Amino acid sequence: IIKDIIKNKIDIKGGYQKPKIYDILLFQILLAPFYLCKYIVWYCWWIYCFTIKGQEYGVEEKLYIIRRYMKMSQSQFDSLEDHQKETFLERQLWIRENYEVYKREQEEELKKKMATDPRWKRYRRWMKNEGPGRLTFIDD
Image 1 (cartoon, rainbow, N blue to C red):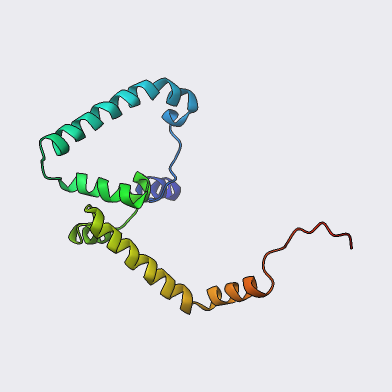
Image 2 (image 1 turned 60 degrees about the horizontal axis):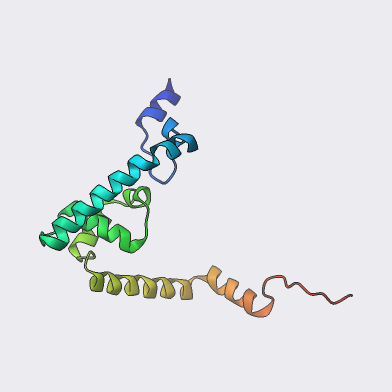
């Protein structure tokens, strides 16, 4: 009973999920023309609405553009917390220049964190002194 409750109630976020029948390769091949047509229709709609008519992006469209800039899959982006997505929208990351600034800030923050992390220092010292195993063809 407890296992059933856990299976049904728990929300596992991430890229993994219980396999469905539609995940089988045969179904993917059979449904590929349908998905291709669906994508072409969606892409034409996108071009028409936002390029030709010049409409403003909605929240979903903004999040889609941000996700594409970050090169994340839909499941990875869905696993982010809501406050992070709100921060992305507040910083207007769907605009390429704003996203580039955000990306540089994140990279600098990561470099600072890695510079002060003792494990990372130990790894850099090991790479400098010993390095990974090397292949040599010299007979010993």
